[in-house]
Structure formats: structure tokens, C-alpha cells
Length: 408
Image (cartoon, rainbow, N blue to C red; front, side, top):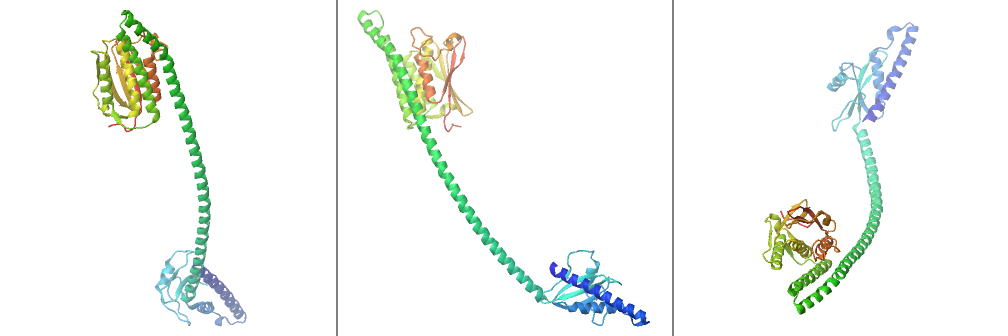
């Protein structure tokens, strides 16, 4: 519509200018001839303009209106049109002003400036011409749209295929890298575990071979001479043998990584209490009642945790058989913390530095193996075993590690 409006507007201005100059020249000639009375008037100019306008292709009718939108009576005809008044009241705008009702011609309105007074002209254009143009434009746009869509689909398909191949290639490479990394980690973990278990087993065997052999000799001599309590030595020998056996079995089961059952911390504490009372008659051992006792751990963790607790508890009663030992457990920031407190008089500061050294012991006749093995077992289950407090009253050992699915 804008294109049609601009084309007609350009033609009208050219027609108005040509007719104004033509009539002006004629009037000047008449004046020179002394015939001013037959010179042209404003109405004649408008009629000439309208006649030339009707010669434009597709134009069917043309009417003139004054600046107020009122019809100007001409021999060619005139008509009232409310749209002309509306157009006359509009402020100057480059937007085309037209009216159209289906089945009728299009009516375009223009303001034309002449040498005399400006006027408004209504030009009616055959609707078939514009509708045909619209149809042609729509078809062209449809063809262009289909072409653009087809080109876009093909381009997207090509890009999708290209990106898909790249993604698949990256996924394959990533999967290969992950598999390689997984196999490497497995080999490293296996090597680490084998090295750790082998070192611990060798250390246990090497450290215990001599004292066990020596204890057996002392036990035989004591039975013959009746000078030493042979039964007590046998019990010591048995305890050391059980400690080694229990530790190695625990590590063997942990190495197999087979989870077959779960046990609560409360049940584990109860087992420690019962075992301690069998080893140390009249021993004062107890555990604090808290909700954390209901926390479950699997058999792999409990298998290692049990000898650790036994070693720490036994160390307290070997220090002072009258000691009071208490077990407690709490959960802090996804960490399960077990504390073993005693009243055995504490550990001197100068002995705390080698507390977990298997080559030294703070007890007379001790081997120093109990806490050293407990430390190694804790390391095997990614736990921390440490002396968290020690004074003249007693000591507190803590074991901290992570477990899955904490109880609420």
C-alpha cells in the first residue's frame, strides 16, 4: 500500500506541476494579446489535473476537495466524503491514508500544492490491481519462505549431523579415557592395598615372632620350675595371638569388599563390653546411651572397628585395672566420632609422641603392639585414631570416620 501510495503521489504532483505551468503560460499569452477575460481559473486547473489523473493505469475515479475536506464542484463531478474531512483534519504524516471495503475500489487521499490554493484529491484505484499485486507478493513471499525454511532445515540437518558426529567422537574418547582412568585407579588401589596389607602383615609377623617364641619358652620353664605363673603367661600369649589373628582376619575381610550384613554402634559397644568383662574381672566399663547408637555400619567397617576398640579399652585396663572406661558416640558434620575415655591416670607427655610406635611401650613388659595395630587398622578403613585428651585423671581416645546413610 505504501508503494502504491508513493507512486500515485509522485504522479499527482508531477501532473499538478505540469498543468499549473501549462495554464500559466497560456494565461500569460492571453494577457499579452489583450484577452485576460478568457484566462483560466482555479476550477479549470483542477479539472485538467483530474483528467490527467484518470489517465493513470488502474485509476477509476478522481474527486477534488478543498483544504477543509469539502467537495469542489467541477464539470467532471463531485461527491461528499466524510473520509476527506478526516484526512483534512490530520496533521502532516508520511503514512498513506486510504480506505477500502471489500468489493469496492481503494480510495487514496492526497494533499496537492499548486500555484494558487492547495487542495485534496481522492483517487480511486481498481481493487483487482492491488489484490493481484498482493497475491503475487504473497506467492513470492511464500516461495521465499519455503526456500528459506528448506535451506534452514538442510543447514540445520548438516550442522546436526556434524555436531552429532563430533559429540559421538568426544563421547567415545571420553569413555575410553574414563575406562583407562578406572583401570589405572583399580591397579593403583590394588597395589596400594596389597602393599599396605603386606607391610602390616609382615610387620605383625616380624614383631610378634620373637616375643611369642620367648613367651612359649618362659611358659614351659615356668611349668617345670613352678616359679612363674604359667597360666598368666599363657593368657598373655593367647591374647597376643588372638590380637594378631583378629587383625589379620579383619583386614582380609575388608580387602574382599563384600558387604553381607549391618550392625549398629550399640551392638558393637555391647560386644566390646562383654569381651572386656571376660578378660578383666570386675572391670568397670560402660557406654553412653544416645540416639547415635542406632547408627548402622556394615560388616567391613565393624570388622576393623571392633579390634580397634578392644585394643584401646584393653590398653586402659592394662594401665590401671581399677580404671573406669566409657564408650560414647556422636555424629558431627557427616562424621561418626567414637570416644573412649578412661580414668587410668593419663599418659605422660614424654610418652605421647611414641604412643602408636610398635617398638616402644609405656607399660612394663608391654610390646607396644596394641595401639600400633589399632592405628594401622584405622588407617585401612580411612579413619583417624588419635589421643584427643590426657591429664592426671585419664585419657580420651577418639575414632572418626564417615559412613553412608546417617540415621536421623
